[in-house]
Length: 192
Figure 1 (cartoon, rainbow, N blue to C red):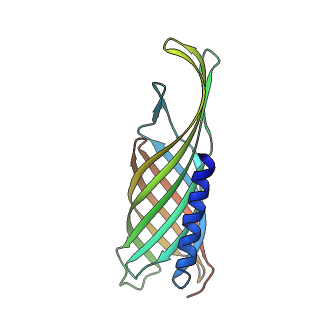
Figure 2 (tube, rainbow, N blue to C red):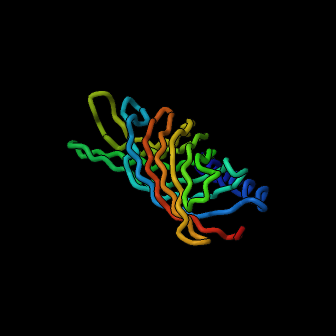
Figure 3 (spheres, helix red, strand yellow):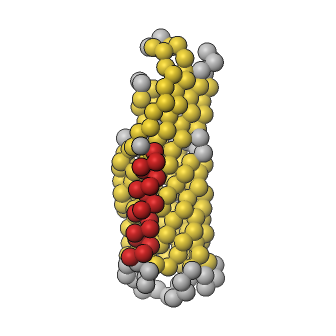
């Protein structure tokens, strides 16, 4: 299942990149910080993804007011230890396909403010080695896909003719709700 999800993500990004060569402008990435309001519940236990990660993204200018921004986020493992010697480890990756609605598209400023909305799917790799508990003996490995949606806002600021700084905050609405902060740098390979 994990390999199928990664392959599907790569195919989607490759399709968007090849179909949008004339208008495709920036590619890059940054860091991600996530805070979880709700975790993913498995075996009557809530697993969280409160970690840093890395973001790889592209921007496709559909029009002056709308951008399409697919991205892949890969998070560092979130480990938790228990007094009885047991532990859990949660590793998450996510694919997002967001639309950016540019709020100040008519101004000639070197920055853009935007609202975003889009689709989200994350893969949760959970290693549950809590050992014996009152509710049972847990020693399992599971991989689950969690679909959802994104809403948020962001900004883009030109650093040079080819470099663009971005920062956004978005809320993932899914079985495992998360608030995500994401700054980074994009590079223009095809100068427009």
